[in-house]
Length: 120
Image (cartoon, rainbow, N blue to C red):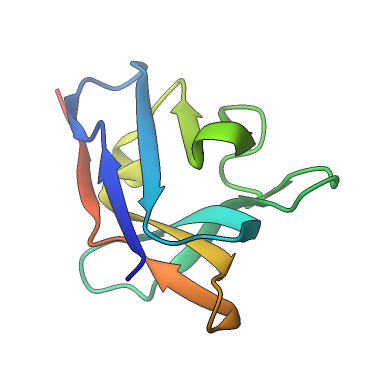
């Protein structure tokens, strides 16, 4: 059973920073793409950032230059460093990963989400 657990959300003032972490656990053969989505109240879930093994990361236009995605392949961890946060970044942030297990060759897994609130 694969599980993804996010951490690092919270309340931050505009202009501040937060770092989100996502940890994957379980019987994992390999992880291909990882990333972060977010969903604001009343809005659809949207891609924030993603990165595949060996590729350059992709970012939503709204976060380019402010957010950075990174990963630690050895530890099945990935991160979202968020700088210069704006109130419009307020949302529940979900991590996801395309994971290969011994029985399922490639499937998207999702965390339960962590709330980021940007407010003064």
